[in-house]
Image (cartoon, rainbow over all chains, first blue to last red; front, side, top):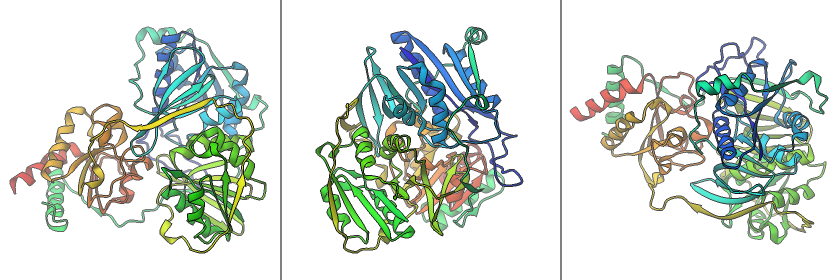
Length: 257
Length: 313
């Protein structure tokens, strides 16, 4: 079983978003970069499937130079090799063009499974796994909460639907799955894993050197921090004062107590 | 500007968010065309002011299958369709990227605003968990999915529209995706939709040992305990406590959130609350954009004191 996991380096969820002075891009200089949350679950699921059926887990990421770290983290946990598409250009790409870059880079690998987190915590497109399923003529399942695989031809997945509904689907392999957070308990890298990682192969491909049909984003008109539309009462002070004020609001303004 | 709106049908009913997308289209153009795979839905849609209702007919479209859906819509889209709109549902997220790859039109998902400015489409979508808005200007064909609550279905203009029934030839599709019946995980779970007051916990609660603190506050206020997704993912609360797009959609009189950042997926489930009170350490947490009362501070310091004050009284 040859499994690919797509991982992305993103800003920590608590990082403040600031724009550059031209307001044309996000100032990333103060970001604390981490592996995208649901991608961690995708890595774990890939490792679990490999432990069951044997095979290879290949981690692939696209991003700036620093992004190679998310590949290293997955290799430390037990993935076998990495493919890093380094964005060494000054350009940003929308998800459709990004998928063309992945298509070009990965198409000769003939993966049996592609796993990815359901969406990135920064751009939130949630499309790459399904786009690649289309390019690679794979089946797909999105928002996967559980997998059940016993051979190399089919995989059963439990998908999350809305409003508390779930559904099992049987997918022919090759297949691309987008993994929902909470599907498993991601492992930590062991010291031994970190030592082993240093010997594993990471193939770096520079974007400027690949010939893709992808073109950069050219339709972004503006970006801005959303303005509040709601009137908000700000409650400030020491924790004692805040507790007192909240109590007063709950009692006298809202009539709850 | 020619606009197609795909109308999703769940359990023989038109998805409400699809009607919001249809209303969005009416604000953009007079050439709005609704597409549905269900005859009943087509009849209902004919009562709105549209250019045309297209009933795309094929038995294989009666229940959802991403491969059949993509093929059917592919046959109905031509170059003259400037924009093809969808509700931003899990179903849309599951199949529309395939169309995007096939037709090489970008799919701009989870949009909160669309405007027609001199025949170019201005599309607003949020990134970084709702902390940043991005406006795109599109003059070429585009797929767009629209976030819940961005347009009001009640504002739909009524009228009389012809139904155009088109028999769809799906040709040979190898069905590599075979779905079983959908089901609910646990029967008799908590129905948060009926609660008047919800105390909701998020990541900021920090530890499983702190959950009883929120539970105690909920009890004192005669409310129910709810949570954001990570708390359920960690296994600290069962899935029936989860609020948001993958959990329950609630609208209590008071939504008291403790350490919930308020990502879009969570907001979808609670922004209809009458009053929202939020405590969070992060002053930039998106929850503060929609809260009526906001406290920037540590819930672990404030909540015990609030509990004491309620008990004293």
